[in-house]
Each structure stands twice: as structure tokens, then as C-alpha cells.
Image (cartoon, rainbow, N blue to C red; front, side, top):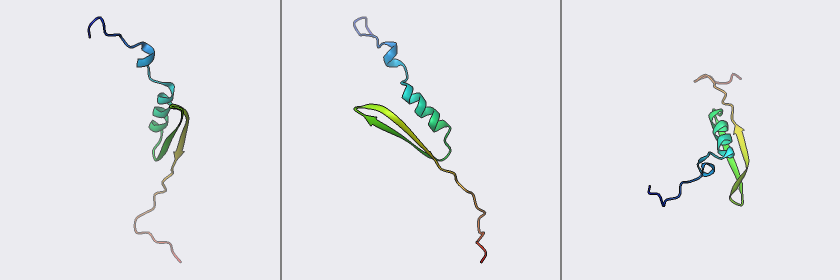
Length: 64
């Protein structure tokens, strides 16, 4: 990088708040979906849907 190349400001290099929120939502999710809603090129909403998996024993059949 020479002296004529502008150095990006700290604001550009900083992680956006919404990205930190998405990271938190994904890291705390075991099964599910995280969706972003975008308006005019900006994230305006984050939706998180969590699934709960119910483990059943293999080979067990309901009794009549």
C-alpha cells in the first residue's frame, strides 16, 4: 500500500450490529432457521425459528 492509497476508516472495518446479532442467533441455535429481512439494501429484521427434535427409539412401533 503506497501513501496515495486511502486507508479505510474504522467505521468501514467494524462489524455491523446486525451481523453480530445474526452470529449470536446462529451460535445459540441447534436446529432451525435464521432469516434476514432486507429493505432498500439494509437489514431491518432478523427472524429465528427453532426446531425441537424428538428422539424416538429405533424399531419401536406404536402398540394398538
